[in-house]
Image 1 (cartoon, rainbow, N blue to C red):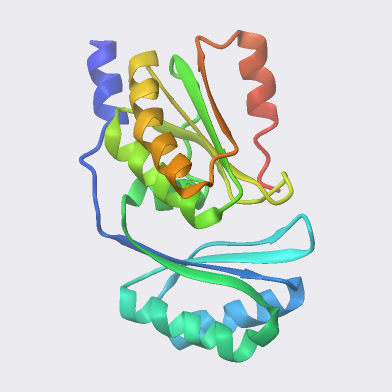
Image 2 (image 1 turned 90 degrees about the vertical axis):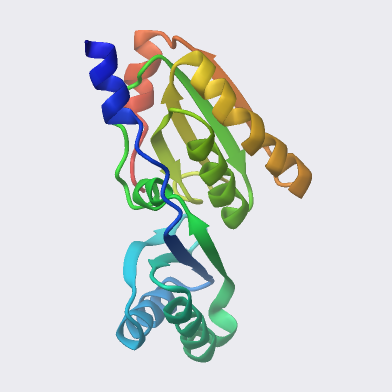
Length: 203
């Protein structure tokens, strides 16, 4: 019965209704100012708005495509040379968006899989592939925070589910030349889990 309940909690019907804009700034102060202008200019929701370790600023917005396109125009107009990169990613699973915003699984289920990439949008798309491929949950999702320029996500589930989740996403990143590395850890030791949980800061 517990396994059945767990499956119900973990697995939701995949949803392809989410769209996000990922805008990275070279300046923290300019990033904050431009983010304020973007959300005032369009009907969008802030998923993530945070400083990054090398003195940059990252904003992730959710909304319909037209609204997001307008926010990118606002960023380019007001941010100017301070905009490092901007990209709109359409049709991604809402669980990916929730994980980016900090809604994560609070425990390790059985095994974990880690995927690391230097490219934010490629990593988001890889995570979308993972969550659509198997019954897994996000344990962590960090976009260039607390780890320099690299981004990564960690999924947890049964060993077979994690393996399946890794397969296509890693293949996608490999084709893009955007895979730093990936690992699957079956049945991590309790001490490893304890330290892993303590390292999941939101910095």
